[in-house]
Image (cartoon, rainbow, N blue to C red):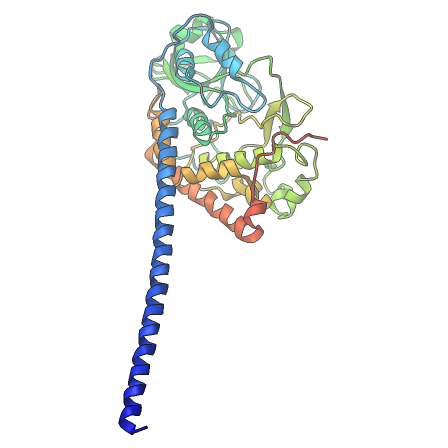
Length: 423
């Protein structure tokens, strides 16, 4: 073959090869682009579903101010009492919730006395109809930052009780008793019906009416004072007597002794021992502790040394999230030790994880704004505390992702264990 013909043939073969490569690359590129487009569409559909789910949840959080019951067959207290079950204090669908909270914020006080035992100032009130409530008085302004080395420093925060109840609604736990804010006139609403012990602790500072109550840390020189006669506070609805409580030591509780650590604070394998203990070796209680650790981290509550459940022998009763007032003290402090149960056990409910993901990217603070707009003492939280909720939620997500990377999603994300029998 002549040289010229060989050159032409080589050129043709080269062009054919290049064309084949081009066509193959083009096909691969098209397939890759199609895959990317399909993935983008799936992501967009998922975001739309999440947005729809969030909007639905947000609509359910909105409570009508001044709501009243549309019937008189039952008192608001009877309705709230009938809501209580082994795994919830109030149901997911509770159309009367706004009316019950409104009644709690307006009902006449029939009796008042010193609070039950504890370290913090409170009063026990009996409302018309015989309903008991716990009144926690205002001690700080909204922008006050509670300083202290310990995560449980400072007085109780009454607005923290209110905000914690609404966070419980948002997270879908429904394990916190009903709480509402209220302005109470100490002179006209409390003193005329106060018992002798409580009445003996009333005093005046300038034009302000004050009381210091009776508790382990109550001091005459540290009373709670109103603006004139009116004192802002929170009211927590007492749980029904038909559901007696039992107290438990939290395995991840603190020692409250300077220089003395609890075992969980230095033993990273502590969770493996907890899993062998009764109550935590089967059933839902250990997962309840994980939920509560997330809840407490979000609100900044490092004071969960004990907890209550309903008295039952099956081990399925929930971890009741009572007494959340050591919360929202310092918006700049993210106390990671509160999450010790989560990062030591590396397990969390799938339902909890799904709800947390729904609330990321600022959705949590947005939901809190909607829910808290109902309360009579609004604004319940300052802007720095609302921002802290979103920041801490990102921290929880980071811990869960580390657990998934270390132990796998199948071991970290656990389906609810509510119906498992307790031995």
